[in-house]
Image (cartoon, rainbow, N blue to C red; front, side):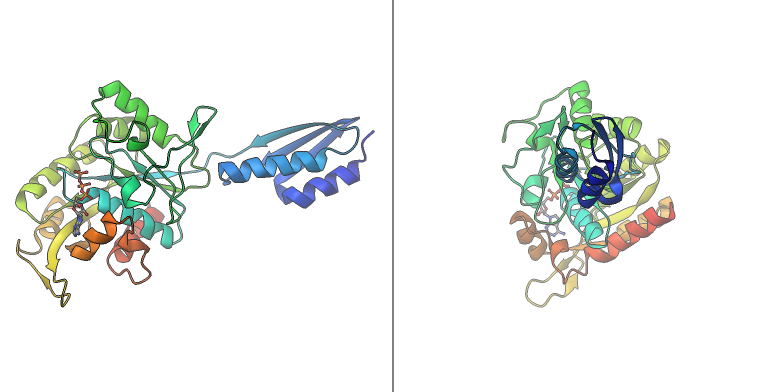
Length: 315
Ligand SMILES: Nc1ncnc2c1ncn2[C@@H]1O[C@H](COP(=O)(O)OP(=O)(O)OP(=O)(O)O)[C@@H](O)[C@H]1O
């Protein structure tokens, strides 16, 4: 016979109200509610509860359950390459995390996975348990997974549609634990990854990154169209490389004109989330794996993230 009070007290001491105990003769069953815990936290809790319940003569069984979290995906897209979509996605993810959300980052840009470098996680390989990937931690409180971590570094990725869809699924359905917001950096354009994202993973909304130039805007319009036609709401447009920030005096000039993306967003009836200047500081910090949004003095990405957070709260 096992002493009920002793086991209950020992389990409660390590698992609090997350555990309930059932005892029949020498059999001790512990059910743990691991909702919202990360995989390592869950494993630690399970091990501690098992140890606590293992009084002399007890046959212990521990079951871990978790409610499915309502995790929402934000797709970050652009009509064409090189507009700074990955830079914006990384900084948006960090700024949202700084605003109190539990954020994860998925780098689905198969043609140029750059998030490991941007997030200072280069060379980190995710591990897997029960065939589910474990996201890798970053110094910015935003765990991440990248297409670039699934293949040998530097190897060109020439996958066909079904492989791409499978890889995207592995990243999105990884063990994201308590993450409530998943920022997904999509490849540029309107290809297989975008379609899989829309059809299989139903993002809560899409953020479109564009530069001020007309051509980028035309492409951006195409990207907006793809999401809008599929019924994915457009959270808004971010204008990147908007105006040139002088590295000496900080003054912003507009060699490509000003207000194009904002006017185009208004014409298309989608919100404008803000502009990010073309700045040598953004480039050097990004290349060094130190996203400017992690800087406590950031005044560029925080207001944009605030608008995205408001949108999430309202929808
Ligand atoms: N606002 C900015 N100011 C200065 N440099 C920037 C800015 N935004 C991005 N860059 C730089 O531009 C280059 C391209 O950026 P990034 O890789 O984010 O673009 P992308 O749209 O994701 O490209 P691709 O689609 O090819 O992956 C990078 O070197 C990045 O550091």
